Image: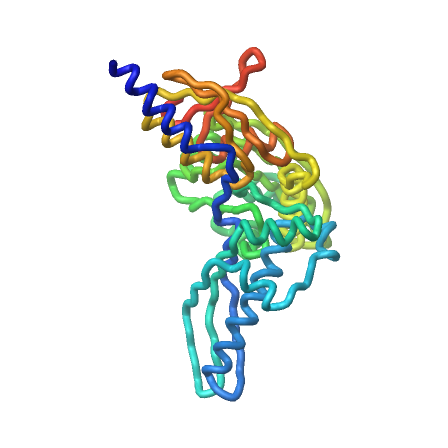
Length: 355
């Protein structure tokens, strides 16, 4: 009887999830740190003008963040009246006024549904996948020895100057405290088990090791990017490149530009190529299924969700999205799922229940 009741409740839960759009706002669509400084006939008028300008500026920053560099020249230039309906909320901090001047820092949260409709009408691809968090390890090589945690490492300072407002990927610098130094001494920089421990400490999806070698007129940079596999916390190198550039600040810009563009190319959905992906969701209880459903609903890159079959421990799901299977699997893993393949069957479980 209990089994029958559970199946009935489970079926009712599935019935509440028809084929539907599953789109929720995420951090990618929030633009922070828009500094405004406007003077006019009065502080009231200056404030109105500043907030209006901030909305336009925030919109352009967002477009450049979520689109490919090759599309920047053809980005639309809408009016304020076009932009306003695409804004969910505005937060204002650090307001300062005089009789005719207004200063503030403004944060704008854009509506993903409205933005999708706007950009789709312009046939411009854009990011919908939550960005990975990347832990940066600036490695300094003076020609004889490498330094990572040394306080005088000027390569760290160049990364601290990175402006996150124009980037889609979140970059973190470690604290460089005693625990960091214990986990990863510089001589063990290639030890993937230690890299995995450091990544777990900062809940990072990726690790970027950037080794810089300066000389009198230029800097040489070697870059290795590792990803953390959530199903077993292993670290896997998946990209590397090197280049020569003018100085440290330019090196940081070149590194982030290349990584951003490569990630965008892999992640931006082909607008005219919708795909479907069939997988099995495993769970132990109705509560666990409810949590799976909620986490799928926060995956903004998923267009539709259909339940094809079910039993007391599994549900076969048909997921509709734009892009390819690898993009979907990577996104699901970042959303807290274990995704594995065995005999051509893909299985999805909650990360916590799979441990």
